[in-house]
Image (cartoon, rainbow, N blue to C red; front, side, top):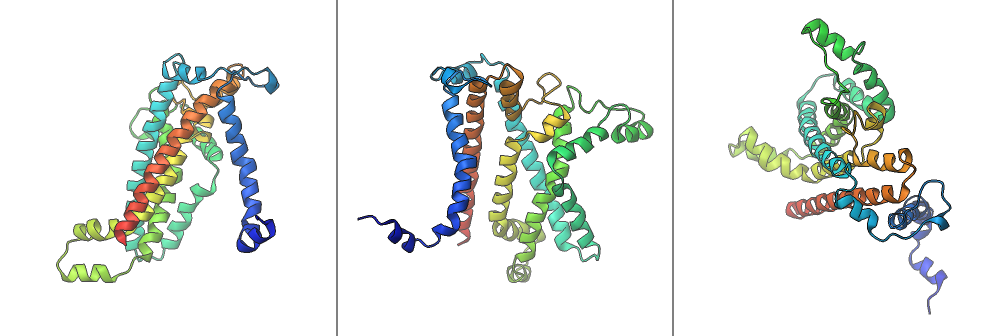
Length: 300
């Protein structure tokens, strides 16, 4: 016969994790269940849920058949932003981490401290600062360009808004990737490099066959964290452009916001878009986690 007391005695750790599990259930599982249910209804903001009608997969059909004309555009720019931002942040982060690891300067602690500053700012505050920098009339970037090269750029205009948001993301989160990889470089043993040097290996060969494999778990961790964050981007884009001009920067998260808040509170349709975003995040996360585990098995 099942005994609660006996179960708790056999699993003594549960009393320590139970509060966190309950909190996660309240903050994550329950809202997700509501999201799934709402995506199959015509529920609108402010309604009593009893007014909502079950519409089956109509909300999803609307998305994938193109009735929601902005949906595929949002998917495209969200995925493009994730790929470009993650790739550049990984490349720059690796380069910065290598410079820090090879440097013996006494200013290294200062450099690390400066790198932490963007991470200490919330994305919304960072975006407010960059919005002033991007200002077409009195922004710092255009002041420099005008006085140096004689021209200025409409940074938050139709053609440049996407790249401006990307620039802010690179500024804020490249140090995050760099610090993760720098910690990995500092923890790597010296013996494999010494043996490779004795065997006549070049710097590129040591980087390709020693550094990359030994850092693979951290590389995939950085990719996972940044890819998921880039897919869910909201704060920076909302503060800088609110999805505009037009829908040039209406990422999936902003599309959800517009449907649920700015278009008569179409929570049912917005929930369907949010479910698509959730599935994309899960697929990307699963792929990177499997790659990380495979890399760990190869190292073993």
